[in-house]
Image 1 (cartoon, rainbow, N blue to C red):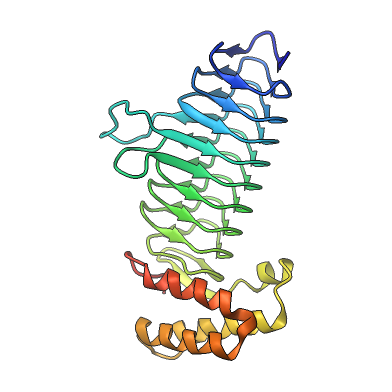
Image 2: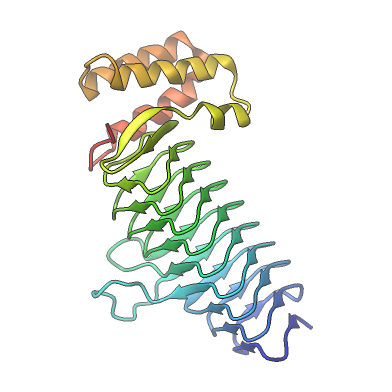
Length: 262
């Protein structure tokens, strides 16, 4: 038997692994699927076409899989897909996708998502991301692996936050944030490279030096973005150890529709 509290309401069509724990007064809908070892706290509501992987911990009062807050939504069969080992704290709200995008709101693995975080329709989050209290993502936002988003930060729709970026407390993100950068403020400004985060993730000195050089090429030498990208390609040839980091940066800069934070 699944470990379901007697006061919880779980639709008999929901698919829960026998090791799933469901707390008091939680409500789980018919199209929900939950993987092994996941814990659902008291008073949570999980509805819609929502899939949770293994070993997630959803704290009390969270709402997952509700209709998107989009006036165009007309009940289409869209989804919320959450990976493995995520921590989702109190009062978080994650919405389904919309047919105006890929139809799926997706969250990866090993993310640490603090209380009152909102993840809107069609957002795409990687893994190992930290989102502090009251951070809010509007629709269609993309967040790369290992990014950190400070508390009370608002991210406008369709913005992208690169891998290993750090966004400071109470920031207004209205431009794309390149990988590895530290940004904060309103208006948003780049403050430097996320050295603390990179060192915690065991980036070598050579890789960090190359990333610092990329920061200079983009922000400190008066180059156009195309000129900076050309120089970053050369940097990759000079520092093979950082080639993947340079390729990540080049791809991000080359696909930015909103423009990058300055």
